[in-house]
Length: 127
Length: 449
Image (spheres, rainbow over the protein chains, first blue to last red):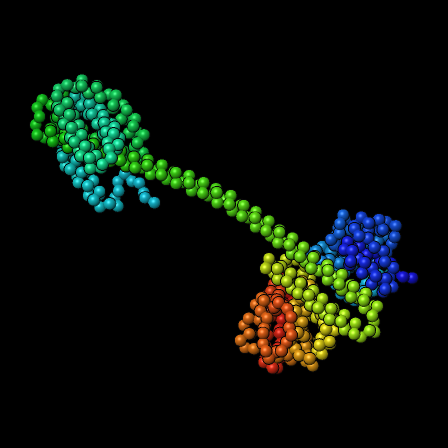
């Protein structure tokens, strides 16, 4: 069965291209363009992995991250954060929020794919 | 600042003046007989009148001085002063030489006024003492020669001399006191206005400083926002481009000429991404890197990752990129992202400058308290004249011999040096023209020590 990924990203071009890439790689991708939309998706579905942009309209990535890690159903879901900021403080905060991977834009899609696969593999091993 | 003194002992002329005056007073007025003078009702009367006389004279001099101060020319002023003093003295001498004691009552009012004035004016104990000494000498002189008013039947030479001399002395004291107090008051008002000005200036400066400080904070805030925004705006399009390239790659797999073009686009996107990182890093270095985010970092893992990252690019250039690890973790206390930057920049440099067929090699050596990482290549080497400035910002070596088609803005090594030093480490190199270059990065295992 195809693994489900929730992709939260407000930049349309990145969202669209990344969605296509991940679909090509065989994942089932659900997208959201802001924090609130992402929360709505999380209310009804459980994903195998979540990709988050930090700078989001409405709820920002940190808030979303905290919500995910507090939710029993999503606590074990690996989270990859994408950010264009690359500020040390952001990185530190992400680690504190229990983010599994932190990637700075412009990330290499190949590396992202590798990391996604590794994280899903790992979480499957754990469960 | 000028010190205000009643007696300016620093001034030789003045000191001599005072010494002469005091010696003369003592010489004239004191004699052994003084001790044997009978204290009588006459003496009491004399004392009263003489006090009146002294103070009223003092008062008149004060008033006169104030009036004289309005005269413009100092020559005229002095002339007038001498004239009026002489007049005063003659007048007083004449008045008190007569047997009319009752006349002293007329001076009661000026005496009271002058007394209150002198009390307010005499703030310096030294001045007060001098005045009292002079007055006592004056009185004693009178008593000694029996020339107190009621008894002054005739004007003998000693009587005239005693009175004139003592009165002159008193007037001089009075004048001096007045002058010094006046100048003290003037100075005090000058100082207090200066002090007020200085205070205002200080307040103004403080406000200015506060404003400047506020402004600096704002600027730092703006700068930080600017860097974040620029960073975001520069990185986002590149991400979209990279993703699109990846999508095109799926479609065109196997089409060699398209893959070549895609390769060129990808290479340049990578280069631009690196340049953005370097520029932003430099901006952050100039603001001072935040010290947070340090943890135990395995150098061999970081370098291994960097080698994997750059391997493809090196391969395309026909350069052998390798990592000779000792297979043992080399843990340093560092900021992983920053350390990654160091090795990306060093190896990227090596790949950039080494011609096709060459090699770039990274290795790690345990050096006791430190880990020594080495990045070497067999490129063209660094010419002697460039060795000193390769760590400077925006220095790109232009050397015909290297024939390098290097692109960049010359920030890589600057950032390497800054980051290494932030980690209390050291970076240096050995290079020989035509043979290659070896960069050494020494990082302490535990910089908390």
